[in-house]
Image 1 (tube, rainbow, N blue to C red):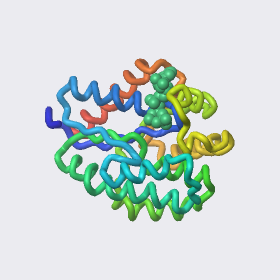
Image 2 (image 1 turned 45 degrees about the vertical axis):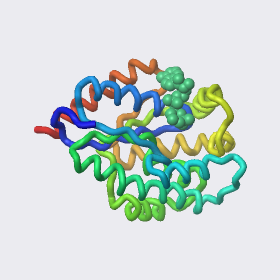
Image 3 (image 1 turned 135 degrees about the horizontal axis):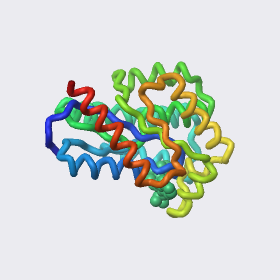
Length: 214
Ligand SMILES: Nc1ncnc2c1ncn2[C@@H]1O[C@H](COP(=O)(O)OP(=O)(O)OP(=O)(O)O)[C@@H](O)[C@H]1O
Ligand SMILES: [Mg+2]
């Protein structure tokens, strides 16, 4: 949708399973709509016809997928999404909200599965053309709690079925990513009330929009 003139802004939502990424993204989208600020919402894997097919594959609990092909599948979805959806939207001057992005691969396939971090960073630069979010909202949560939240939604997907130790490494991975690039991250305690979290996200997004317009 189009709306009030604001600078383009790329915002990703990250965190372990069930942390509240989709909840917070929807709440931010509602506030942007209310404020008349042009934006799109999208997600990984997904967001394009190819991405939706990739999503079915990577989340299929009946498949066994090795770490490198798993990373490459996510990367295929990501490359298509950047080129067909995210870049064009930013070029139109919109705010892009993305439910998971490259940090998820670094956390899950890097820290979680043990793939070499430098390799994933290099490949991700190629895959995304170097496009990095302006702001990443990291919803930080004990993975046992997040998995319990996600479980209340129905049958666990392939990633949700991975053992708890994997999810503990993923959470630690996200935190390690913050230390690499602290200015990009808004780290939030995801046990807080969803509306309070949404309000804090909105304050920071408004600051970013005002700051980048100046
Ligand atoms: N701050 C919160 N406090 C308590 N429960 C929450 C909070 N935010 C979201 N939830 C609930 O937790 C569950 C997971 O939320 P949500 O789907 O937004 O998480 P997610 O991070 O997108 O999960 P997934 O990784 O599975 O996509 C939902 O049932 C949601 O209503
Ligand atoms: Mg979600």
